[in-house]
Image (tube, rainbow over all chains, first blue to last red; front, side, top):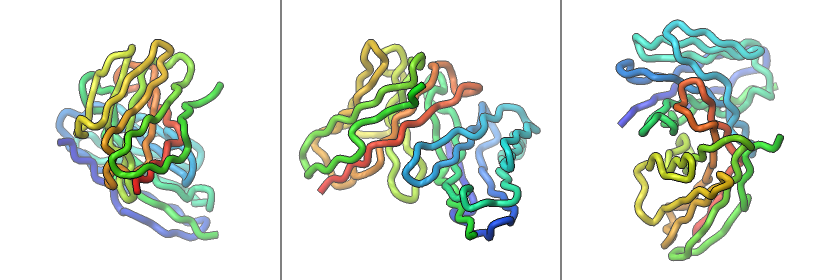
Length: 113
Length: 115
């Protein structure tokens, strides 16, 4: 069973703070890592698909890094805004043909104005 | 273009009943996956269909079944509902290749409550 761990479970920050959270995964047999943002009452939104060790991706104030050798990915948010409040999920392709995703439990971020 | 759509939005059933949930993928997407999400956990994989064939199944009992139609839409059926089946059911679509470079796009989900 593939074990994807996310930490912390939840995070409360003030508007303007920068923050980061972690996704840990087994480093053997790495294939790809997906990051999603899931706002309440909306659909999960794909942020990044990361495949190469050392990958760094950026979308606005959000960026992510990947270390496949040690088995972790960091998601960073610079200058958090209230609209960044959401649950951030990481996920691994699994199953036959790797067409499905195994998700971590997520990090719930609350940004206070 | 419309994203992934699901119906109904909410559903209330009683124990022992059967339920059917529906999903329409993004136009051009041939793969549909179903996930169950309960409070405090990430989505759990139930089924994956590609070109109308089941290509993957998660650790769910046989009470759960699904199918994909020629237009690539999909239905998820759950028989003999239990209280523990209360959850948000998410549908996701993708072009169909492995999820290395391809993304899955999610619908808003169907909230099922079993009383």
